[in-house]
Length: 442
Image (cartoon, rainbow, N blue to C red; front, side, top):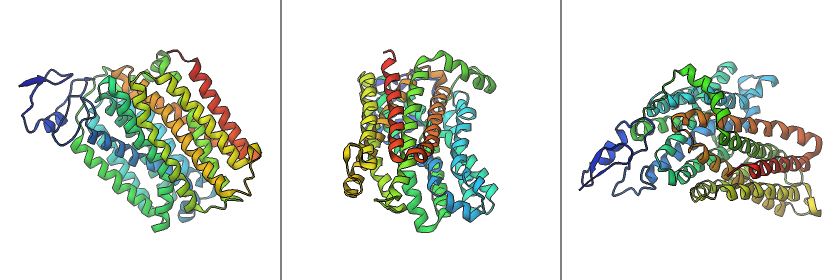
């Protein structure tokens, strides 16, 4: 018996033993839904993308994103090894993310112009090469250039996420995006503790060696497993870049979801930038290894991503968004109790319960931010399919601005009022997110 593959009109036989391989490697019509790739041994999560491929996407984005955040706790170590002065040492943490922002604007729109599998693999290969250069560099300037280029090539993440979404039927797209986003959030949350542990084992060059091998392995695996997709934007590269502004003006859903995601990311960056300062002081006195374990415990909040995606598929995006924003506010209130003694709690007399409450606050905050971003991604990927690369680039670029705002404001809040001011500012960000979300139309 024969039936039609969804989205492309081709026929297949249920008894054909190599249908999975053919479906995975055959080119698809521009912006078409992806064909099913069912296998007797691999369960399918939807009609278009298997559980195995979803896990591969999640692992790929999780591994790739680590280099963007891993150096944030290693600035002093790397600067001393390469002879970077105080002015240049801050660029160790800044340049990967500046490169990533440049990639979102200049490279991600290529997903609407070039064949996606080849583009992803080439960008990841460039990322691995840049990381290898950083690992063996003895020049501070060469190292800084290498991490900037690695950050730029890491923008392949924002081609993989919408590609996974495109492979899923619309009714199940949120669940697929959530599964991939869980890998992304785990990569972000685990990057700092992983970096600390690897540096303890063999120094910062070992970290970059491991990252090089990991990204190279991801590139090789994706080159053999991803299906081909040739988009048809009907525009030149320069026209694609110029169209970003028109897309932002013409898509209210993009503007609103990007704004709430930016404020949520500001809250996230604010907390994680300042909490390390809090934990090194009395009465906690944690060293880098224990702070890494704290971050590892907080990563449990990433489990919210696949749940949020499925909730969005059921049509509950609006109440789920409100719940996520309220959870962020509640988490910061708990953090204020645990770290600043709000409500009369004696932090100095109860340091262990205080740390336990901070861990719960971190999990709650991460879950709220992850839910907001996952629901936002789902909404963005239901918009114009021919502009999916540009839409995702704009969405991520805007919320990365929010992350930079949160990190910068964390230092000001800490200097002017300590942990209590940090929590108050975080609550202000989260309240703004809640109000904007409540004002959004259905």
